[in-house]
Amino acid sequence: MKSVQISLEVAQTVKEFVTITQACEYEIILRSGKYVVDAKSILGIFSLDLSKPLTVEIYNDDCADLLAKLDKFKV
Image (cartoon, rainbow, N blue to C red; front, side, top):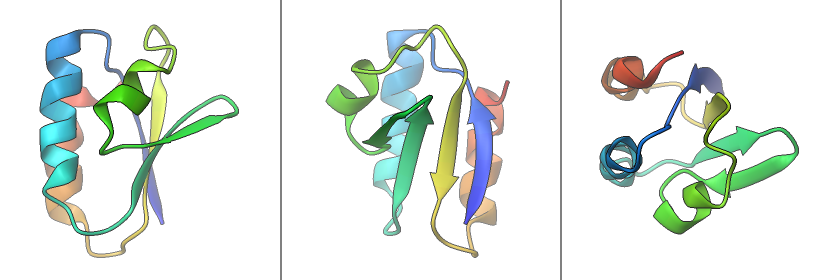
């Protein structure tokens, strides 16, 4: 598992993030405190407190391409 801290404060960035994660076949989750949602679910993401940094957890060791795409969202 790999994890990275990101920020998704604007609706457009949430949409862009979901588009990126939906292209991946492996499991990706977003964690905000004690809350956990599927990173491919736009409704799930909007249920989180987006004013704080989120933790993305990627359950695949071969995810360098995804990590490169997520660089623009890093805190």
